Amino acid sequence: MQTSFQAMTADIMTHPLFLALRDCPHHGGDNSLYIHSVDTAKCAWRLARAFHMREDRVRAVTRAALLHDFFGYDWQSERHRRYMSRYSGWKRLRHMHAFIHGPHAARRAARLFGLDERQKAAIACHMFPLAHMPRSSEAWVLTLADKLVASKEMGETVGWHAKALCRRYVAPGRAARSR
Image (cartoon, rainbow, N blue to C red):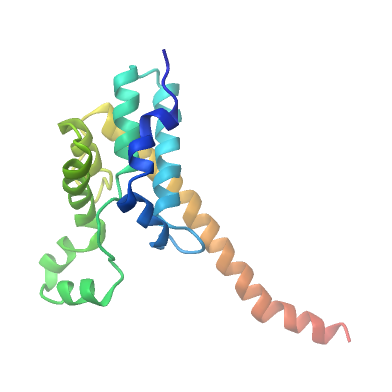
């Protein structure tokens, strides 16, 4: 029997700390960390079904995908900038958000939602190749889903900025020429 996306994720989707992700911007435009996480989880759920994964693995990858960016800090804040200023050179690079948020999210999600080792490992390595190589089917599906969703979001953001530039620079010039 196939379990629905909602049934697999209801406890996470209604948790106050997860709902707080609605206020965290992500990948530019009008996107939030909440929207990104839900879209990634839905994509992972569809991919796992398409790859004919067992039901327990579909559930595992869906829940891991929902929590893959549940790191619990504002990486664009002044506080995070001060944290980063303690490091320089190679150490600074290794402590950048893209490299550290996977393991942070895995620890935080495991503490609150009791994830198994495969789910924690999938979350920790979802930033491959900036993180270590995925070692399970759940990790590969999560990594693929995140890349697909992030690419779509970044494309939309670039389009959003391009339209804004056109409205700012191109549209006024056309109005002046048409007079």
